[in-house]
Figure (cartoon, rainbow, N blue to C red):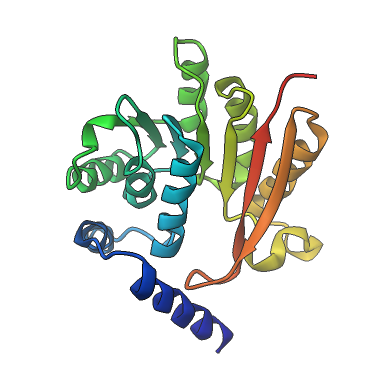
Length: 224
């Protein structure tokens, strides 16, 4: 009952303040047809990601976990001239679907999808002349969040925002009776954030059509 109310409120504001774009609906249709899990961000949160990237003036964005390219499209839609988004996806079939979905937009040339293990690709980025990212959006395997964080720091600069999705998991992140690999990963991730003097962070709980979850916001500072 409560979740239905959350969904109704999401839909109310979606209809009221977010301009409809059939291209995003087409992405969702393509993902459903391909049998992808319904784990993409909601439209409300997609618009929020877009506004956040715009407010930051983000020119270089890294996304960990492409899936069907839904959040990729929201983030890339605000890239300025000369901007670039790199999205990391392990599954080649999902990568191909995301590329097809992103071809619906005029910004497709600003997006690169790197196929393969995200941690390996992030290590490769650290060894090439890759500009530091302004925004890093972590939305991959939850059990690997600590590793993603470790690999994100060398790709950052003072002022980079690292944002991690799905960090509340319906409140089970601190329930010791439910320590799945995902929960362990999220727990260790936040312990690493808390212990690193270069990082300043907060966590925002969210409710809506996706249920009870949340985001971590981590600002990278100067080295101590």
